[in-house]
Length: 83
Image (tube, rainbow, N blue to C red):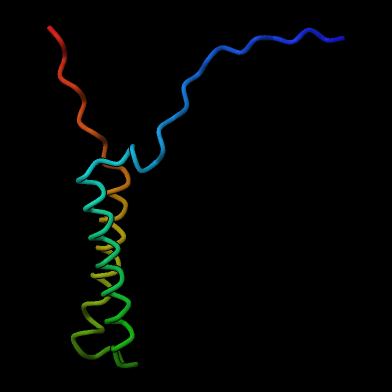
């Protein structure tokens, strides 16, 4: 019979929601809202691309995706060094 090896205790990683900072959550939600408004504006745009909705929707959609990315990659502040 094969010998069983003992594994070292490794603590579980925190859930993804615990790794996000509050600022990251706000940025992610704000980005999602911007993307939603961008697609709503896109649905109101005319086919020729004239009008405010057609000019604004690309900036809303891309800006929203940028905010979602910033929110996901926002790192928590590092703890101050102990003296």
